[in-house]
Length: 50
Image (cartoon, rainbow, N blue to C red; front, side, top):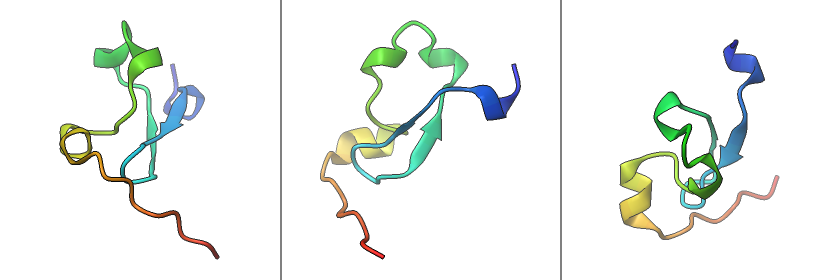
C-alpha cells in the first residue's frame, strides 16, 4: 500500500497529522497520539489561527 493512501489522524497533543503504522494495525481506532513523547505530555497545544 502506498503511503499516500494510508489513513491519518491528528495528534491530540501537538495537532500534527500522522499516518497509520503497521504496529498500530490492531488498535488504530484507539490511537490518539503520534508518539510516546506526545502521549506522556497530554497537554494540548493551541491550534494556530491563520
